[in-house]
Each structure stands twice: as C-alpha cells, then as structure tokens.
Image (cartoon, rainbow, N blue to C red; front, side, top):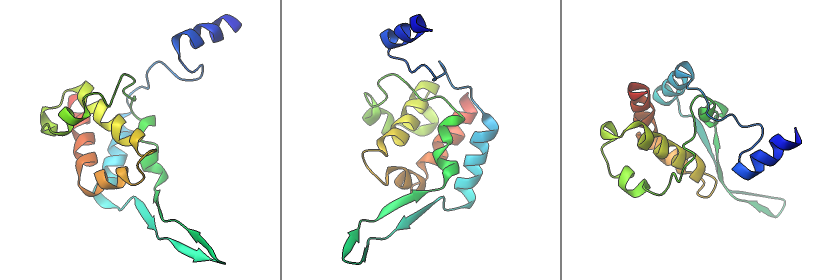
Amino acid sequence: MKEKIEQNIKNKKRIDAPDETPINKEGIKTIITILENEKPYEEVSPRTENGITHIGYISYDDRIMKLFRYMPFYEKDYNKNIEKIGNKDISKLNIEETKQYLTYIYRKERFCEGLIKNYIDNGILLKLLKHFLEIC
C-alpha cells in the first residue's frame, strides 16, 4: 500500500480517484431533462439579520452539481484554449473540446460564483450536454 501511495504522489493522482469516470448517458439525459424543464438554481438575496449582513449567493440543485459523476473531467489544461473553444459553434466541437468546455464551466464556478447559472440561462450548458451525447 505504501508503494501505491508513493507512486500516486509521484503521478500527482488522488488515491481514491478513478483514472477515468465512465460515461453515464442516462445520468446526462436526466440533467438535460432538468435543464429543459426546471430552473435548477435559486438566487438567495443579500439580507441583514441582527445587524449582520449576509451576501447573496446561488444555490444549485444537487442534481446539477453531480453532473461530473456521469462524465469525466478533462484533466489536462482545460482552460488553455477556452477562448478559442468558447467562440466556436458548439456543433463543431470535438469530444475533447466539449469536455474542456464543460470542465471549465464546472470548475470555474469555484472562482466566479454564478458562472454555471449564466451558462444555464444562456442555454450553452444544455447545448454542450446534448452535443456531448451525440458525439460520445
């Protein structure tokens, strides 16, 4: 076990992370249905209680946040080409570009709250997921 841990540290891999998440097409279809029929987030407004101001935030439906249990992250430098990929017609993206774009959206939420909401509202997340199912 110690050798495996040392090897994983050398390879910069998490011990519990599979090499690649298998694609769960039914799970992705569920997310597509949610995006087509529901508003999968709630905007929580800023408020003041007992003299303490709480900032607003976006509360996402757990099902949306589980998207990457159904498909693999793009583990390489996913934001290296995002400007080029983001300006391309989604139907022209290959599988690697589509995974890069989806990974970018999901991971950048950590640094820019509301990013996923914006991609839901403008329809890009839905288009990317439908395209992903077509080409995988």
